[in-house]
Length: 284
Image (tube, rainbow, N blue to C red; front, side, top):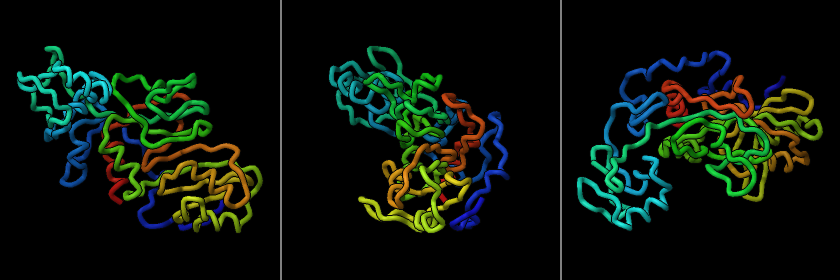
């Protein structure tokens, strides 16, 4: 097993030295560790924290009333009251402190959740799939309105995060934060050392040069590639740029969260400690 890039780069975690935190643990206390957005909720339930104003349509969507678009229609029909008064503006700011009702029924916000899923091939990385193929959210036993954090190709497998926390999803996927994602790829033919050096240093794609990556050879035709950018089908296109092709692709890590022994097609809810680590991943 060889390492082509700076695998011991400062700030990189060694996953083998980190024990998975038990779900009953709580986020450790201390100023500045967990952003206020994440303090609204966690994997066990809503945590006490500041009320954050959001648009009314988004509030209804997070409360499980309807999708944001359908919520706008409901609001426009005068079926929503805030503090006892009818509101028809879907952009009106509300918070947990407001009494929001639809047709007289009180609406509450969902506790924020994050799930890890081992996506099988053939499952699409969307909240819902209008066609015949199954959507990844169907693998999670939750009543929350969950959405994938980024995507995996329909033919790719492995770790995919789902959440109803838009702030966290943005931090994990925005290029500015460069959260690491590790992939294991089986290639059609054994890559040469020169090919591996090119992949690690960057290759030219139709949408520009790729950023430097960490790369390990795991076998004759298998490599592990750690990326900090999230372009469409990037690993597959990088392999094609050096005259090779990906036969199978599996994501094994997203930030500090590892796929581990999670069986294909199965899901698990992340603990508060794990969620706090994801926020920390985006701050490094």
